[in-house]
Image 1: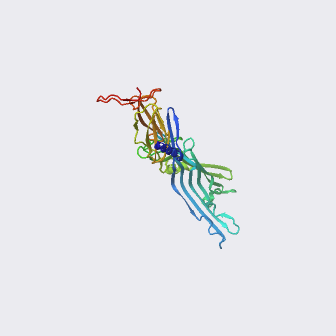
Image 2 (image 1 turned 90 degrees about the vertical axis):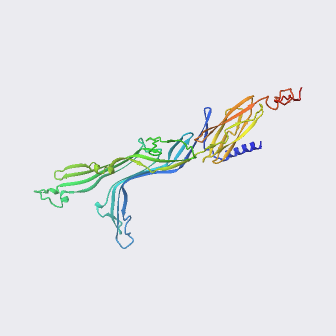
Image 3 (image 1 turned 135 degrees about the vertical axis):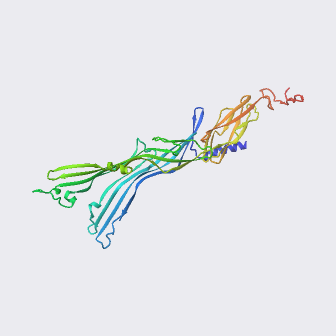
Length: 449
């Protein structure tokens, strides 16, 4: 009896100390133990680099205005063609039975950026007045497309219904403006009386308009390229069989997205004949001219494959040395008991519901919470109400994904005649009986008539 009391006290202590994370809920005539856990944070990243982004120059003003020089210079040049995305988040596993794995992104844990083109600044500063001036208007320009986005990864998922899009534009960037005479370096040799040189009457203006558009969509999370267990969808998860051997599941995962990008660059050449006040704008799509030569740089659709990551989860694992027991013959109204251990040989706390299917077998406790590497004692009382053979089953519903349902078979026998004491009927005296042996010994009756 002391052992039983100690076991009950230990079970109560474990329930009070160990945190309960699983959820045990009724499911018809059975039970289900739902559990979940998060992996460590992981980060997927991909950079599509066509021309590495570089910047060179003086940085700030050089030399500073603190010296003897009356002026300072600043010269910086930046160029490149690249874009990329990065996402931070955790993987989450839910079970019982098959493990359902999906990802949740950190708040503002996703980012995407692009930079195409080049820009340049060339300035000088009067150290006395502080005025800043261009060295030349041809040395100061911005022909770059640049944008950045912050988003919620995985929940957003870059899917086709809600893509991550970026864009930038260049409007009316003037490449050159001047007369035909300026372009050829002097008079054309064609003069009209009272009007003058013909080349001076023809005016040219060269302007660039451009747009860079990037869209990241159709993303998916998968185990690897061979298994292809995931689809391009906005409701993504992986259903993975739990590990049969070992209780730590390591999942190599990858992330990929379809990415579409397009650059439109239009060169507009406007010819103006001043004396007639006529303008002839001519648009030339540079994208079409160079698409066959450098189509990958200007336009295209790619499949971005982000860096692979590993996420790991720990699982409980149930172990019972004895899964069947036969009780001693027990009179109705009397009891026998049996104690067995439930061990957690896994790497995560095991939580369980213990249920007996027969009222002749009473189980204590009815819930378990066992730390990894520990065990808990379960006591079963056999208290028959009727004579005859009694059979029962104890079912243990746990958050072990491999064996969520475990069973222990119970057997017992209850009799009024095959026990040492006959049934005590009200008004009768108890009698001690010695059964007849094969040698023919007679029955001795002590007490009564």
